[in-house]
Length: 434
Image 1 (cartoon, rainbow, N blue to C red):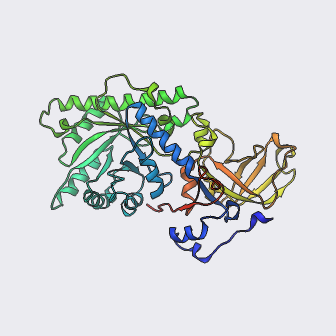
Image 2: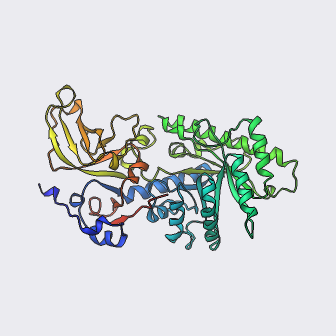
Image 3: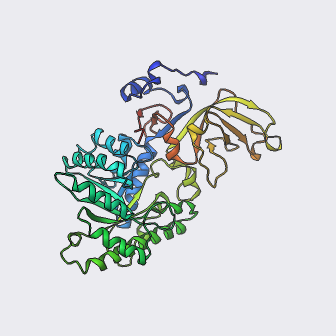
């Protein structure tokens, strides 16, 4: 039972401190960590980032990295600078992420110069975003926003009227590609009046048009993913075309000074971006590829067939805490582990269960409660009773973004460094809160 020796010092009950965590855990084998624990293979993470840079480069596009999955300084640096290429453009999903990008030194050292707040701008966020923009401007950086409703334009105009030095906001127009998650309708009868009003606003500069192919997660082939990506490009290019038609009647408008940015992508769609998928039709702007899940990956991404298992850089360590012979379906065995919904999320996917047990194909995480999970033996495991109470197992879950959100810090290993694939080499502390 050597594998269940785990320590728990008092400071772990407080706000995580990277230096203290590094001192406590760097050099420790994984089987000595308290479970559940999220482990990230830095080598796989880094390779995934380089691969995405290669995709964007081959496709002939800029790249914008979404930080929402890992929410760390260390992960951001790997996303933005690789052996293949580099970018300084990011998306964040919360204002906490935005401020931590600044506080983490990523703006001061020039790593991040272009920061997009990834939700349609809210009235209660403008003061924060304005202060953030002032901080970014000190280092030559820019904050950009999303707009998809004319009410947002109205309250931005009202806000700037009250300022001593009014400014213009650099904005992407978010386009709804049919997912009905966010974005204005691309139908000409509604979009043309919308974009005309936005272009006429004294407080908005239209930077470009943005779409997110969330439905590309349903892809199960390269061809399907390419079709989603192509559809997105068509969507934002049509929006840019309509905007240019309106600008033709406004020869002095400042938007004539630079091309629109056409930002498209999701992790599956971005995986399909390559020279083979290069856009050949006339574009009315500059292509930008965006994605966020790709450094970590998960079972949902595995189901698309666009990645293989070795590219998944995250997994959750759990301990087997009980065993139930014959309790499962058709008399198969079950077991209990200490990783439940908080550690694994309740997201599901096309691959059955809430997670796969690494190296034990006859077991999956089949049911979960808040703090524990039920491991189910599959039909292939009738003669494969490989789990014992006290075993430390590794589970790859369905959705890395929500899995990461449940963990106060990540234990980092590095499979490219001798002896470091199963030993902690660093600890990353993610940004929590909104």
